[in-house]
Amino acid sequence: MGMPNKPPRARDPRIAAVVDQAGCTGCEACLTVCPVDSIEMVPGGEHAGLLKLVEIDLDRCIGCGLCPKICPWETIDMEPYPQAKEIAPGRTIRTVVPGQTAALPAPV
Image (cartoon, rainbow, N blue to C red):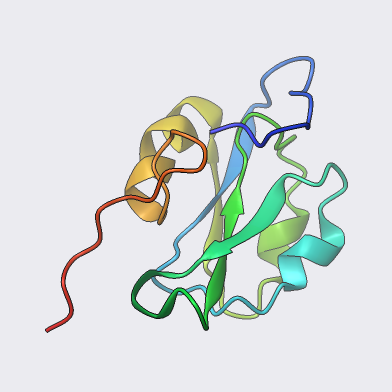
């Protein structure tokens, strides 16, 4: 899931941030506090042209815990790193292949 042009960190953290995009409003509060620039905005689901959501690059996240503290919607959780790698793909709009969009459910 690594972001292009951003080197990965030296070693895996004990914990990492995972965003539940079902609750993300794209307010960008977390972007302002990430010390390693591991959070980016991505097109958001049904209204991708209007709404952007955040996605956390687990290859860069250092597990500092700043993003969940500032998130006004409480939609970012800190998880043990191995679990975060398993959980993140199910909570994100994009797949683990950079630049590819995951299949989203059809609008009802």
